[in-house]
Image 1 (cartoon, one colour):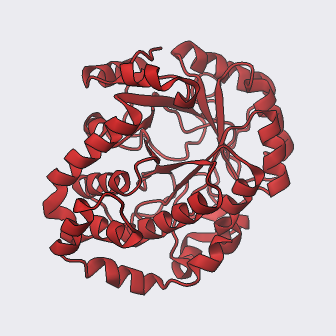
Image 2 (tube, rainbow, N blue to C red; image 1 turned 45 degrees about the horizontal axis):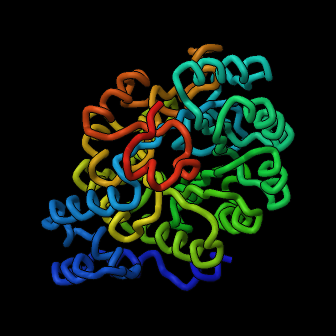
Length: 378
């Protein structure tokens, strides 16, 4: 289990080590062909800031070599905002006494029709963590309903057991996103006050259960704004390295969600600048050439327009973060406010203006020749 690796590290010692990195450590990391976790520390350290232009150029080259000039598009489909957890950074928190909504089968298909009309083939199903309302049976039914309509179905829901993941995979589930939020175990409890999510170790073990269940792709990440983003991303990289070694047939993705405004939320404890977020994304690409890097509509238009050429491979577009937000019930409670409010068509045109092709299905379903020739289109 990853916990055995995790327990060997001290948050404070990792933090101190990252901030102790020097320019020579960064140069050494950039000059290597294969980089270690210590090199990743250097690339995310303050010492790497003067090397950002070099890192951006290297990240651009690596991304094009591995993924071509393509951006995969997906849409989140929020099924429910009901949640039994009290988390002070999330609009779905149980103590946030606002209107709750869980989509019925008819409403799920209505939202699906809207997304299909927009061109989407890849949907991410999102719920709060409410086992009685949106448990495994609800998710199983949702996947059964949507499988005939979409080429790729992912979920971002409560952590489940290994056999439950296996069952959902048999229904057509492709990927699971599960964010630790922060790897600072001591301070984790300051943000997760009640509910199953307050169990740090159970959540930490979730990717192990996913790997054993044979899930095709696992998405990891932390919520930037809770604790030091450099230390949190070191532990994320450590986690990915463990998973790649033990579940080498699985694909992996990383997301970079910044704490965004929502009803009842705390203010960010730590702020990451746009320049620092670019550094982090480039560091990930230089460190791990195969991993998918996802940028959501949490980020503003300008940032998303520019990050396309610097390492990102996946983007959401036209997103709604409330159940039924596309067509059923636009005024239901949001999980957070989005920043890039452009339509799907506008995002597609932006990608094309940058000289890239929007990918509507998962690129694993296309041949390498198609990728290299950039012939994938809507």
